[in-house]
Length: 321
Image: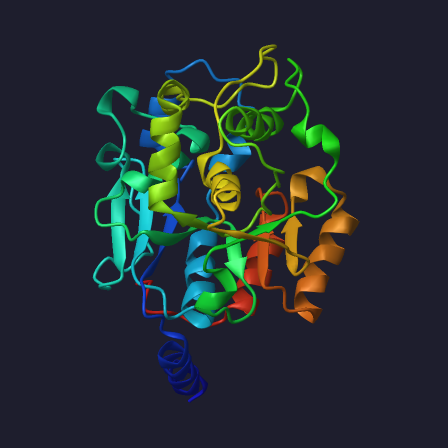
């Protein structure tokens, strides 16, 4: 009975919030436990720095449930995967769901690829993708209902971010930081503006802005796309790839298309970088407060994470088998 009531509520939300324009959703997903995928990756020189990023504990299933419950009005849902993979739990018969192989959006000579930055730099190539879309990692979730106007042409950002995020590149920058810095340094050559660091949550994107950046920086885009692995922890060089979904936020703000909005109602949990006590407090805060967006990054304490997600989204949605 409770599931029928949930479906009725979601149907009412759908027709209440259904936008007059299309907003798609794009996910990137990988199963790093897959032996076929592992064999391909092991052929490359890899120190394992980012192995935790590839491990799947089926977070995508719960992210899809959050999307169904809190944003049922979305148009199409594209899930970008390695050519040899498909999430076993995804209902491909659902008319909203479309599995997209890397070879459909990237130059075949750049494959196989094991670098999310390179894949993100090409998601705007998805055939049939709407101009407006939300980009999710598979470990990002909605925690409360969102309406189209909550995200349309809005770039949420981290307020009072340290100035070092926008400083010059140095060789010992961690990979994520040098890419973030590169975004601002590259864009500042073309568009003078005050730059923001978008929050680590579902990002609102425009396909046209991403194509504009690809054409604005063709060499850098190609270089980013050809990087099969992310910068290793012992690589003492300055990376020169960029984070295209985040970069398009800043371009959209500079062009007056996007509004920059500080976001406080978001929680980002990194279990492998914090103490167990801190992790437990963060999980407990999700049980007592409804965050608009939250992310549980990495797979330390996977049993606790899965137990929480199964209880938080304790229903089966039409996007899964």
